[in-house]
Image (cartoon, rainbow, N blue to C red; front, side):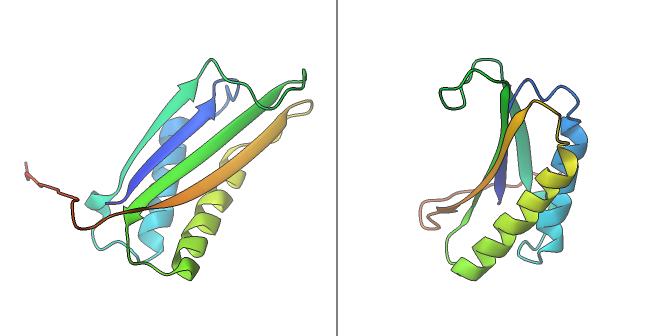
Length: 121
């Protein structure tokens, strides 16, 4: 825990996804909310088929969904969201003619039914 999913439109061609995932993970470690950096699992998926609104101009998006075990305060969740949004903002450059939306969503995972098994290598 946590689980971070990055979804983005594939017209963000200059995006270095591996570097972005590492930077997002570093932001989570830096938050002090997660005891072991190995607990952070991040992944990314580009979408070739998407629509942003109804307009005809070129549009793009990047959306981070962070799922964490429940029990954290709204303030902590807001801080996590803001730090991840800052990383997105720094990593994804504006491009003339491209309408870009960056979003972060923080979700709670119910602790009671959550199960995890760590098998060290």
